[in-house]
Length: 372
Ligand SMILES: O=C(O)CCC(=O)C(=O)O
Ligand SMILES: [Fe+2]
Image (cartoon, rainbow, N blue to C red; front, top):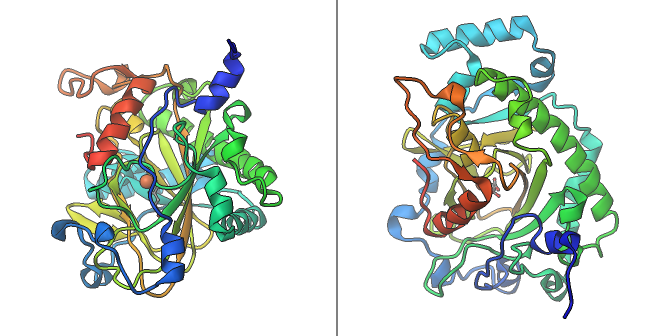
C-alpha cells in the first residue's frame, strides 16, 4: 500500500483540509463562442434574483478610497481627517469603523504593487482563458476544489453563473497543486509567485491596522495566519446577450479574512449590497478593491461586515477579475476576539476552527445563505 507523506497529502488537498466534489458544468466562454445569442434556461435567474441593469446606472454611490501609503505610515493628519469624517457620520472614532460598517468594501490606492506587475498578471490571466477548451479541461476542477470550472454546483437543477473561474492555491508553495495549474502559459507560475508576495505584503499591513482598530496588538490577526494562505480565483465573464437575466457570480460573501480584488479598468461588473441596494463598484484604475470576509466579521463580533457581493455581465465586453482570498490557518479559532466582547456586546458567534467553518461556508454558498 502506498503511504503518502504529510507533505504530499497537504499538496493534494491544497491546504483546505478536506475535499468536496461539485458537478462539472459547461464552459460559458465556449458556449458564447459558438453561439453568442442564446441564453440557456439554466443560466436564467429566478425573477427576484435578476439584475435590473437599468436601475443600477442611476446609482451614484462611490465606495471609499483608502491611501495605503498613509496607512502604512500611520500618518496622523490622515488619521485626523479620517477621524473627523467619522465623527460627521456619528460612528466610532476611527474611519475604518465608518468604512466597514458603511460599505465593508473599499478601494486601496498607493499600495506599491507595480503597474507593470499588475499588467503582466492580467496578461497571464487572459492567456489562461485563451487556451483551447481541451487544454483548460486538463486542469479541470478536482475534488481538492482547485482548477478550471465552476464550483458550488450540487444539482442539475441549480441555476448557473455566467462565468468561468479558475481557482488555485497561490501560497504557500507547499499547497500549490501544480497538476491543476496552467503551467503551459509561459511565466504564469513566476508571475503568480511575484504577485502573491505583493498581495501578502499589502494584506499584512491591512491586518495590522485592523488589529489595532480592534484594540489588539498589531500582530494579533497575523498570528491567526501563521502561514498566510492565499487562494486565487481568476474570473472570466463572457459578454451576454441578455445581461438582465443572468449573474456572472451569484450573491455571496467571501469566506476568508480579507479579499484583494483586481478588476478590469474599463468594465463595471462588481456590485456590493448596501442598505438593501446593489451598488456598482466602478473601477478605479490602479486601485485594488478590498472587502472583508466572514472570518473578519466573526472576529470583530459583527462590527465589521463581510459584505455580500455579486457580479453582473453586459452585452459589449467580456470582463476579468482576480480575487486573492487571504485565509486564516485551518486551526485558527473563528468567533469574537476578547477585545470585541463586552457586557453590552455579548459574543454573537460561537468559536469554531476555521477548517470546520469552511465546510459550512461551502454548504451555505451553494444555497446563497450569508452569515448574520
Ligand atoms: O469579479 C468580481 O468582481 C467578483 C469576484 C468575486 O466576488 C469572487 O471571486 O469571490
Ligand atoms: Fe467574492
